[in-house]
Length: 311
Image (cartoon, rainbow, N blue to C red; front, top):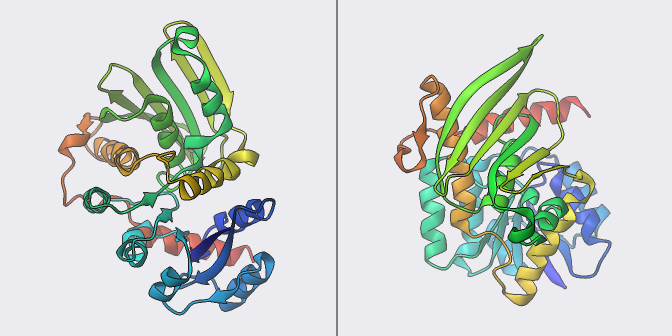
């Protein structure tokens, strides 16, 4: 049984992951550390629901007691700090999406990985059933991908990164640039459009509706035909959790490597800069190190306020 240490219970994912884990015998949350916005009462309820053995008072203590850390903070600007106790002890750590939110953190995470840190992440859409089924078709049958269109609705980065990571699963690494194309508007709802250019010639377009939730719709145009699917969100978490367990049990490279995860972040950073520059394409290689990126602390404050308001 894989012993998981849970770092913060900010989002809905700890509950979703824990519920899925209870259906099998591969892994369990066994300890928790919480310094996020969730209350002691919420932590106690989480521990009772999933049979968590212990609440730790430090990350070092948590890292000593478990086989792997799962970071579920909604402030991605702290993720590297939260991951370091596990990395220093040679323990693998899963960082929930978005794994990080700035060029500085991308570079730091890549350095850690190059030095041997086992960092897992980030979006469950990389491993969803629909993507696996498409990729299982021989290229001679399905054709080579020319372009992918993806939709998402909620917020600009925290949720939209899902669809960009799905592009990574389909097209691999090699994104060269991202360009803000424009926006549509109806009443007070805005949809923004971004074009990603890949080194091999393929493109990907992601559309983000800001505000209401929208499903993940994907259209894949290949040299032979067009494929379309809507991602079944009811099966998402199991696909990701199973991959993490596979990696822990077999020590296999069955999860996306860190450079693939940071490329997804850089795509969105380039798209954000392109929007600021009135739609000029921004090369991922030209992202400035001092670019502030996406503000995880600001997102956490807003997320916490909304969570408290719905109690």
